[in-house]
Amino acid sequence: MDATMDKMGGGTVQPLDKTKGTGAVSDPIFVGLLWASGIFVLVLLGLIIAELFQGGLPALQHFGLEFLWSPAWNPVTEKYGALVMIYGTLFSAIIAVIVALPLSFGIAFFLTEIAPQALKRPIGVAIQLLAAVPSIIYGMWGFFVIVPLMAAYVQPPLIATLGQVPLIGFLFQGPPLGSGMFTAGLILAVMILPFITAMFVETLESVPPMLKESAYGVGGTTYEVYKNVSVPYGRTAMVGAIMLGLGRALGETMAVTFVIGNANRLSASLFAPGATIASTIANEFPEAPIGSLKLTSLLQLGFILFVISFIVLALSRALVRSKLD
Amino acid sequence: MASLAARRAKDSTVKAISIGFAVFAIFILGWILWTLLSRGLPALGPHVFTNITMPPGQNGGLLNAIVGSLIQVGIAMLIGTPIGIMAGTFLAENGKTTKIGAAARFVNDILLSAPSILVGLFIYGLLVVPLGGFSGWAGAIALAILVIPVVVRTTEDMLNLVPVGLREAAFALGAPQWKVVMFVTWRAARAGIVTGILLAIARAAGETAPLLFTSLGNNAWSVDLTKPMASLPIAIYQYAGSPFDDWVALAWAGALLITVGVLLLNVLSRLFLAKTH
Image 1 (tube, rainbow over the protein chains, first blue to last red):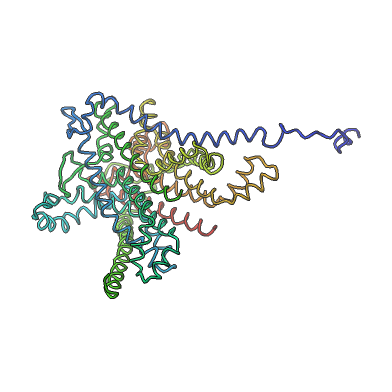
Image 2 (cartoon, rainbow over the protein chains, first blue to last red; image 1 turned 90 degrees about the vertical axis):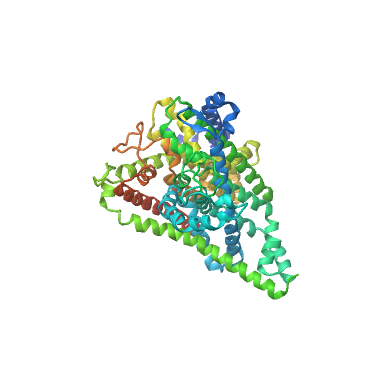
């Protein structure tokens, strides 16, 4: 009986105790977890840089800064340098950007100005799917489909014609192997195209309609408004988008490994086989035992790639975000 | 200034070229899919799913690679998703205007586009060398690092779309932050967060480079996470470059499986998001 009375509220009224509120214990834990995760992401990049730097340090100590511009890569004499790979990385990525850029400008023009509303989304998604195809699939497609095509139908006529032209002929010389810098650049162009296009479209759609309408009002054609109003308005962010494409192309591994020909020598020709930092790491790693000079040289290459990518990506981000702020 | 006719002609030409470029991009996608279907379908039979990888000429399959991929991607998601969602929530809520938040957002954007092969090298130095060998764990953790930035980015973006009034209403009722986040903001942004997770699965499933130095690949049946573990992308890489016709055929079959899976995940997540918003 007494117990029932108690349960029914016969006891004293509890004073409001702030320390026993619903979030007093759980909230600091939850907020702590949020902060910890955020800081973890922040620290992750530092850890990656530190690990690559430390792993590549012995190579830097052994070869000195000369590692950066030495063209040697000889496992027999144990002489290693990064020049050929840095050159190949930049060369192939720049070809990719040069090829992807007009395509992206055109497709962004199509998606923002020409395409009927009903087609816009499906076509936009289809182009974004190009970014979802795994790198290794591009590698196989490039190796089994594009390389033979290049060797049979594209490179021989180019070598026979443009290869004979003074001044630019050196770009188109050598045997038509199919694989090489040019093919790698083309495959990379398809891979970075969706990223550049998506950011172009996003930027162009943020152009204030009144600006465009004013230009139409004074009689501008669709293309003139695109070229003289929309693109200049979004210029900064669009340069950022191009940098993002460049950054992505620099570190692409599997697709390039399949089609670049993997030759450790310098050549100015677009058709010559070459190597990038990423393809060299992927290719040579299996023959680089722990503790070997080769392994630390590969890690040093990784560190160099990280530094190059970081600079390009950070620049891209600064340009893209500058528009938003 | 050029005559009106000339300007109109130029406008039409540029429009035609732009349409041509868009058609070209879709043609490339179709070409890749056609290549995969025409070479992968004939090689696709029950043996691909029932047999493990075997020496050439013995009717080997990809069972161990498929299972290895599922295990590693699964663990990568189990590790990466909670961290990614928490970090994304941090960026959208507590750390939104702080210096640490801004720095973490910057780092996440870099990680999102950083070369995946370097993540492989990182885990190689961090786990493989100290622990004395390649392992499924190392592969899964490398993939988790690739999953995190994707989840962080989508979570933050989606939480930013949740109206502030919704949070304020919950806080006004006296709810602690964990309840507001878990039962109000996360719930409101659920569809977007799930989309991010699906996209992260698609990314992790197709990655090859980070697995080269971490889980290495394994031609025998093994589900032991402390040993080297097979995966679909590594098996494809190994087989596509081989001189044996049946191995190359198997590589195409694997390539078809992985691409169809990844593209379906992408399309489904987009449809899912479009439908719920």
